[in-house]
Image (cartoon, rainbow, N blue to C red; front, side, top):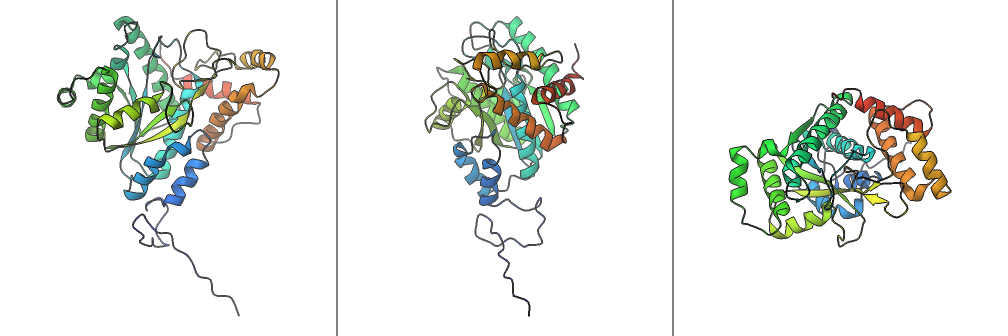
Length: 324
């Protein structure tokens, strides 16, 4: 006689059992599923995502949007290139969108924000904005990220709905934070955004550097916003003295892989190998390998090539539709 098997049905956030017949893509993800998903993606700092986890288990994000912003400068200097690490945002955002059943990913080029820095002239900002548009548009087209929408902040700033939103926010000493509050308020209303994907320099409970978590913490103290935050790990360089950096800004003097069809990946790896005396580069190699791994998970296994060759393959693919 066969044994009786008692099937345990998962429960949603309110404790109601979910029918076993419910398709995985149609029902809300359980808290356990969300935690497992985040913990199994090494590009995400899962330990800093508790607020997002609670929100995702209380309300179904299906049909909503997530967004991430792309800056043009650090607090001290303008970007000179777009690093390979920016792909972590595109790849993780697409995987999150599929997993959670979200409708859209909004990518916002923060050109207006850059102008709040005295060293960022309108000419510099315009040149970097156009470069970002070319590169990021090519990434979206070549990877067929059809659910991605690329926006430039200065275009949004001209809309009446945004100007009214900004005017309603009291004056602040930090104009960057004021713009951030206006951006999120507008995105929630006009693009149904529920999640913001950012980056953090480390996993410390208290943000210390001028990364996105630093500013997000300030935002949450100043305004009640119907949005939650997920954080990616910082970008990486080959420099022993400055390893963790912005994933989407490369400044002068950095040794790192950038998005360029002619990038000499094997040459840079060779220099790093000599400098470090090993193949790990203080964790940089693993970080880059994690980006490549997620690329293959989403778009298919690349041929049996070395890591350097796989990176070169990806760079050629994502830049092949970049127009001058």
